[in-house]
Structure formats: structure tokens, C-alpha cells
Length: 431
Image (cartoon, rainbow, N blue to C red):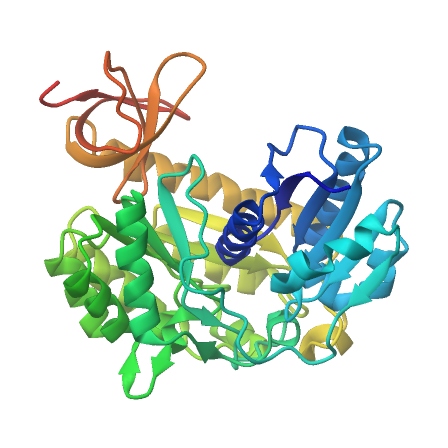
């Protein structure tokens, strides 16, 4: 009989938001949620399939679950389950496979596991309302909530499998989002992260994403609101002005570039040119003091030459970016690029990835050092084994601080006193 459940979540912030919702629903139904290193009757793996490496990580998570819970059941849900349900079903130890339209039904299907049956529930086409019911977000030990406000994507970038796994773009009702924000604040959350696949396409009737942000800020007293990844062609002047003028809106933008060569961007079917990205980032940097701007870059797209790669390196060198997430291209089934000649050798992809990561490290270090001696607003998230409290500033800097008091889930002003290679230290202002 299933009494204890643990979770393993891979991939994007949206996956984490969905896991939170499913976890809370199971908790409210009477199941005991345990840590992912604790043996459980059931392990739920919320999977990712955005790259071949992501698929491999999901398979690794299944192997870890078998090792930690040798007598437990395993349910694989989400994107890898959606993409390759039969492949997942053949993996040792997997008992239940649920696609993206079915994962919120897991509670209704647990009796199948208890009977020892193995079943696949994956719709061929993903669509409809795949938003969690109001209030179905777990607080647990976390201090921030990921709120899913948008799902799916219509962009159809040549390399991207997400539209096939998540379906077309659709949005949650604006009033429901506002009600959720009010409820989360009442539960004790200090920060909400607005999450989605392509949140800039958010629409509820005539209201867009900027209207959603404005409504949450004006109609709830949540102390911090953070925006997850947003496409460069969808980041509006109004949203920039909101961040510039509203201190509760975290000074942090994650804006995918993908490539710095206009020719490669065209092959990728991206909807902007490098010049737009360049102007946007500089505009943000000049108008929002202290803003943290991160990006995604993809190396090794079919046809990428050394000249194309150098164009990307040059663009990134010039921009006031704080970090990059670097991905190596891998062909995804059903995408426009899958039939192209994967002409960039794997060793070249690795070398280019490493060059980008080194540049990202330098950019991150430069970004951090400008705040040495500065006072930052930090949400304290946990206490480390070394006795230091650790938190995240509104502009995405992880800070360690000493305190004689319990300050978890408090927003405190911290003066930055030391910036090392990997750690930032500070001291509390006002005790």
C-alpha cells in the first residue's frame, strides 16, 4: 500500500511549479511526502526531454530511485513520458507513465500501482486546461512559490521540441492568478516566480503579461514578484517601466539569446536579430540600476561555423550580462532541424561550450564585484550545515550571512562584505 512518496524533478522552473502542485495535492489527500534521498513506497519523477542529455538525466533519476527505494514503485510524468512513453515503460522499475495532459490525475491512478499493474496514460496531442486548481501549491520548507500562468508555445523554433510536448500557447485566467497570489501571501510566501513556457505570450482576453504583473502587484501584498524566462521580442517597454518603478518586482531578467549570428538565428527560426537583443540588454542595463540579466545560448546548431561562433562570442563579450546557460545542440524528433546535417563535430561542440562557460564565469564575477560594499534586499531561504544563513537577493545574487536569530523566510538588508570565486558573504544591517 502506498503511504510515502518522494519526488524527483528535472528541467525547467515550470516543472518545479507543477511538482509543487502535485505534491501538495497528494499531501492534502493524506500521503506522506518524504525527501528524495529517503526510501518511499512511490517515487514520482517529473521528467525533461528538451535535449538528449535531459533524457539521460531522467533515466539516471529512475536508476537512483530504484537504488534508494528497491521495493518502491516509480511513476514517470511530464515531457520524457510524453515524448517516448513506450521507451520509458521498458525501463526497469517504471510502473506508471503519465503525459503532460494526464499528470495532474496521478492521485486517481495510484490504485493501479497498488494492484501491481503497469499503465501508460499519454494523449497524442497535448492541450486544454493543464493548470493546477487554485491553491494547489505546496509551501513545504520553501520560501518562494512558482506560479504557473502560461503553458505551451506557438513559436516553433527549428531546434525546439517543447511545442510538441506542451502543445499550443494558452494562459491561466488573470483573476485566478491574482487570487493565487493573495492566497500564497497568506500562506507565508515572500516571493512568487511567474512561470510558463513562453510567458510573454500570456493573454487573458485583452490583457497581456504586463497587465498580469501589474494586477498581482496592485491587488496583492506579496513582497517580491520575479519573472522567469521571457523572449526578447516580447519584453515590452511597459514591463521595463514596471521593473524600473516597482521595488517589489525583482531586478532580474532571463532573456534567451540562443545565438549571436543573424544567419544562425534565421536558420533557428528565431523572431529577432542580434541587434534587437543588443539594444534591449543595454536599455535594461541603463534604465534599471543593478539589474541582473541572464541568457541561454545554444552551440553546435547545424551549419554553425567558426565565424558564426565568433560572432556570438563577440556579442556576448560586449553585453553587460551576468551569466549564460549553455546548451549543446542535439537533434530532437519532430523538429524542423532534425533533418539537417548535424555538421558540427561533438568535440567542437564541447570546446565551444567550454569557451562560453568560461566567458560566463568572467561575466558573473564582474557582475558580482560591482556590489562589494552595497546593501541588497535578500530573502533568506535556509541555514547551511556550517551555520550560515543563505538567501537570494532581488537581483539574483546568492548571499551568505551570520545571525544569532532565526531569519529563514525573512527579507533582510545585507551589506556585501566579501566576494569570492563561488561565494558571496555579507552582514546584516540592523542586527
